[in-house]
Amino acid sequence: MPENQNEPRMEEKPDFPEPIVRIIKTLADKQRRQILIELRRDGELSWSQLLEGTNVVKGTLNSHLNELEAAGMIRNFSKENPTSGEHSYYEITPLATRIVDALFGVFNIQKTAFKIPNATPLLPIHTLGQVSGYGISLEPVIRR
Image 1 (cartoon, rainbow, N blue to C red):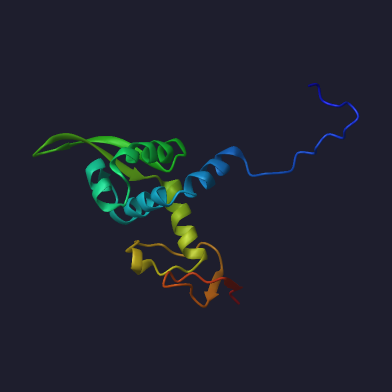
Image 2 (cartoon, one colour):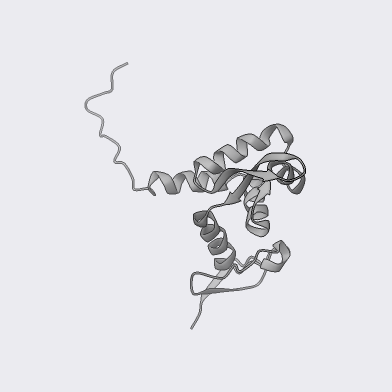
């Protein structure tokens, strides 16, 4: 059915650029966030180590890794293992490192609970109160 010519056109509302939207959508999945935290904490990990270190089901790990790689948040590379030959490894990208550190920093999350190295706040915000052991405050206060 053709559009009614008399109806007003919906004005397109502003949104983030597509690369940012893709990152936000990628971070919406808990298992992908777990993968990022593991890689941020441990550096490079093999596929087997990621499977072991996260709650990701074996059949979906590749899908999550592909999505993270497509969003520019992880990098896949081959590495020789002296005992078992060449293996596929993953590492977090500098972009994703900055995003993870900024999120931990802006909400003043207790980095030690996740064993995240050098995660420092990038914005001048500190928080009061905590939510269920994660160190997340719902009342940010600008530092003076």
